[in-house]
Image 1: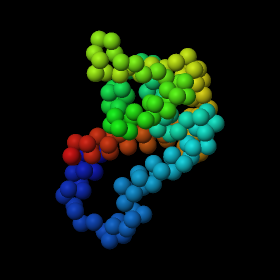
Image 2: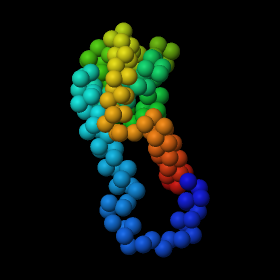
Image 3: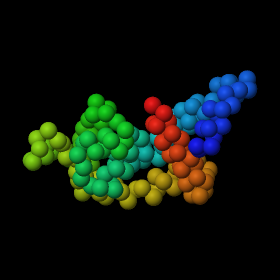
Length: 158
């Protein structure tokens, strides 16, 4: 990534063809993100989750009890977006939200037994999206690593 960044900074002679919408990296990432969400929908509908709810559950399946702030940081979501997600997951019986007795400003989110049980669906969900993506695990790892590098570079540039 760094080499590519250095070459782009030096070159800046961008061919006209590369200026087209379908050639833009940002549009490829944007439209792929939307395609992922659409591909996840029927898979997640079967377990009763939306895509953002699934992301919250992934965080909680790794560590079953976290402050709201930590979940927001992991998912890069603000509390205005995260709170309604948590409320719906709580209404579904998958988690609880309680004030931290040691710090009333914090809300601790914990998986319920039902939320823990739902983790058994992760293989089905991941297999379904893997099939939809048409990639091997190795290809997915490579793509993920490249996207993580790209995200790191973009965050550093701001």
